[in-house]
Image (cartoon, rainbow, N blue to C red; front, side, top):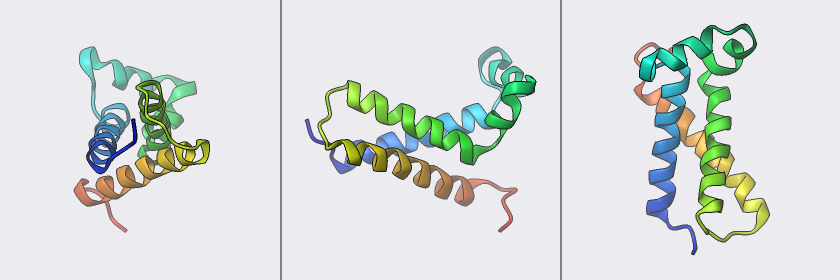
Length: 99
């Protein structure tokens, strides 16, 4: 199965939502808020730019496990693309962002 545009954009928006969930939202039972207060995890989970790399890689892994076929280099670029879309959406829709 090859990756089409609809799958790309749905995956990118899911990556954005997952990034915001981990880096800013409370989460179910305040689980993400608690993770952000742990010393070892706090710096890695508070920054949406950092978290977008993690969620972009996770989204890419899920697509790969789902049976999508691409050359290996494209998988790396796809993870970075998901991160870039997430950052663009974050800067567009975040009220407290100041350039």
